[in-house]
Length: 292
Image (tube, rainbow, N blue to C red; front, side, top):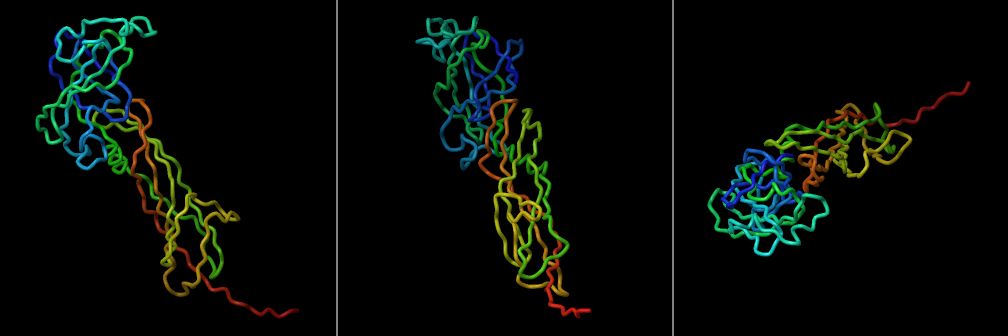
């Protein structure tokens, strides 16, 4: 991730939409342009609609919430609004172990709410970390917020393959029959509103629809016979009627990371309905066989 920041003598108002309430930091490098590619890990607001997943929170729609950010030396009196704050120095700011790094504090102030209305909010302290001196000053550049709801919607649009039940050609009444399916974890790389997003999709549960009006849910996909991890017994034969349509709906958990950052778990799951497999159920009949 790249952030371009310039040293500012005055803390002019700048606009930035936070990437995520769960990421860790704003990465930056020196450059001539005022452009932020991504600011990770800052959650300057705590009201309704600030955090992804809350009622009124950011989603796939036009969330217009914006913030301004500024990095200042972690010194007494170095506060937003003071045009000389970026020039201050103190023992604490010089306490970083890495040569040339100084301890900075990140401040944020909300500018607009989700509807785009101006908000009269004060500066709030976010975090402190050792950074390059060139990072001092405002972080600039408006950008849409990337939330887990956006990622989940993208996964749904891209799609997850439907699974099919592996079953015998037919089974018998009152016989415990083994079933299984073969889903695999899925790893995908997506580009969403300018962010590089890695997605890991993992099957977590299986709902078996047996075609006779009953169903079961398991945490495993079953295995081929003679394994009996997933079995079902039919009590009625299909005879000349239609075969039972057996299917398995697979539920997936999704986690993602943005621009190579930390992995975040999406709090909702995705369930993909399975494709039907026809299974005739026959009635076993006793047959007398004459001995020679």
